[in-house]
Length: 119
Image 1 (cartoon, rainbow, N blue to C red):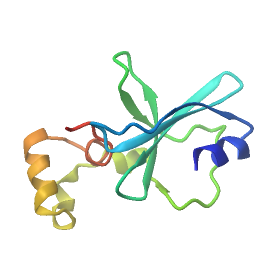
Image 2 (spheres, rainbow, N blue to C red):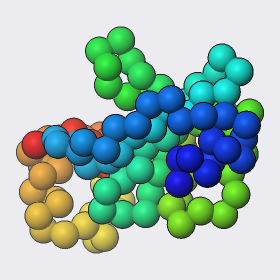
Image 3 (cartoon, rainbow, N blue to C red):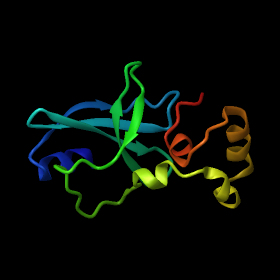
């Protein structure tokens, strides 16, 4: 997915991390003309998002950059508005195991649930 996105936008995948422990997502850095963005892809569900690295090496969710266009993809890219939405309205869609993890880790947004580093 990331290689095709990079090629379609005249860029390259300059970093790829498929080691998911303790995370629940893969990450790839797409670079083009001195600009870059990370693509996060959830391991369990067909959701993806854009992000930047923070000072501690973690990820901060971001919007789609203007220079990057998406074609049809099996993964659904979540918007920043969707990622920053409060998750409590989605309780009916979550399994008891997922709700138990949420109670323990106390995330505040949908993005913190879909792209997490809980062990």
